[in-house]
Length: 466
Ligand code: AMP
Image (tube, rainbow, N blue to C red; front, side, top):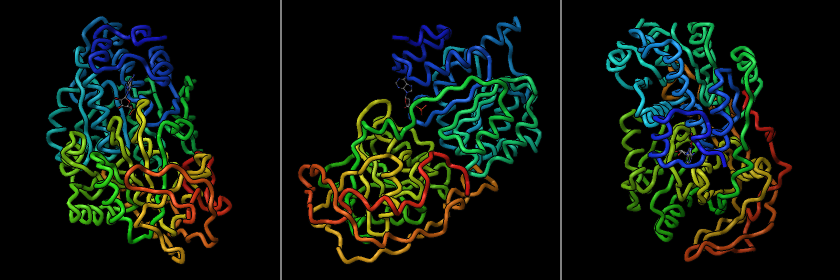
């Protein structure tokens, strides 16, 4: 079996990787590390959870020390200049990527830094003053520095676009183009994207020069380790059901997804009333509130973290035992991203979706996308009203993205409402009851799923707008 030491990385990097607890490279790392080390451009299809961050960070650090060695000196970045630039869509992801750069580069004489919006610019100006080897940035704040003349991009040797599809989804294409125009012509470009829409292909065509191309298994083919289940429930009984599940099943670390920021705040209030410690993480929260919520959740002080899709994008928590879809997402890919928060790096996990009659069409879209029916279990005491009429779902905008100054929200690329499924629910297979709290009930609706003929969206995997 190939190990990290077979991949051409310096001892200092191998030592940091080993101390971090990694023994075996993931498939994306096995492919990306040698490709990046050749110095050529790279187009990589990989989602979060695959180990992609180390996949580009490790060879990037190696390249920087090799480039210094080639220059025959211990090359330091010139004042305000940087040598490697990593662009990410969100603040959280930027912070996490920089943490990885620091972790893996701890035995190397290389500096790193991170810049994003929502926090003071002065400490960042100070950071940039002496130059930085590896800078991780969100596009909006990077442009602020460019316009203030506090950063010099003319020495960039390596550019990484991480989660490029998400950056385009969030309306960053113009910002990215402005940034690209300021980079030197001779550089190495790495583009990581979970999906390949026409826009991503266009960007790759313009940006990359004879790239190596690699792709690892998409999440929707690797979600087998995650146990998935739906609990049919009336729309106004979702929060008591969630509180019931958390309490009776003693869930200690639960990530809950809501469709809107308002929904996230409301749910936190309801859970707190039920005596469950919870916090919301979304674009309207200050950076310090988000960092605090995430830190408390990670170290187990906070039982429930409630997040919207965009806010959750950069969250990296290993082996999260429970993910709950309080609302089903509007786009099937987001379901896969959400449940990917559990069962990471090979560990199992449980993904529960609370589904009301309004969401049957969304459920059908998801099942079509993941190519399987999700087990349905009715929780005793929370049986849904069989005569309930579906109501339109308000797909409200998630507002401006935290790291975007003028970014469009993901909500804006979607249709304003989804009508509920008019046809009667079909009964299909039922699964095992959750011990102690849940029993299956074959006479209940939503079993299996809604009819797949109502699917509105293609399941091609492309995330292009429109
Ligand atoms: P990423 O896709 O970069 O967000 O990484 C997903 C998760 O996998 C992170 O929690 C990493 O710490 C973890 N990870 C990355 N590479 C490895 C590895 N080679 N062995 C074990 N875990 C890893």
